[in-house]
Length: 170
Length: 134
Image (cartoon, rainbow over all chains, first blue to last red):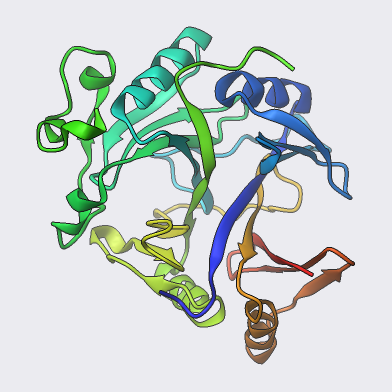
């Protein structure tokens, strides 16, 4: 544990069309608009907890962020944690964003999480994940090491292999 | 307010992953200034940073930028404009300011009756805010 305790509060994204981005995050995550901060940013989140701030870009025609695998300096992605910790929850989210027509970048088993990466309207890469059972990570020297694809499991064609050892996380 | 999606809910903001020119230096900076520990340095030079692994397996992941990566003006560009972390222990806010000052990092401090915040940029110009309740 570090000497200073922290909690990830929020990411701030500058949008080319803030109205479009607000609607995207309302639709995708079910976020509410929670007012404005002192600089006019739109604050969004759930249960009154701010997790995202959006501001309008002065030049909406500017370059969009580069996305993996392109080279860039800056944010690769920002991640939001889903609940409860169940693979069915991630499947529900996968079905939800497919129905919305969201562009999915990749889906992967990280051992410590199972994750879906997708693009927002400005091509920011966003991750939604569920935590996997902590015992699974504790068994390994490097708990973040796997990059096994999850596409078939999310589509319901099979179950992720790890679930057979942790059926309570189904 | 629209109809809420069913079957899931967002519990919390989890982590930021960044690509930087010198990930070892950036990770060391955050370990020294913020006090992040370092959990599980993996292949390809990735640094997983958190203040408490049991609470959040990583809050900031630092990765190397690929060859040919260009700098970006995070004050105006579309996309990432900052990340915010709450300091949940009482002494942490002043400790971080002291460490930033000792390293000569420019810090903007805002305080009111309810909230204290500090903002700074890292070596690559990425903006960070840390705050605590007043």
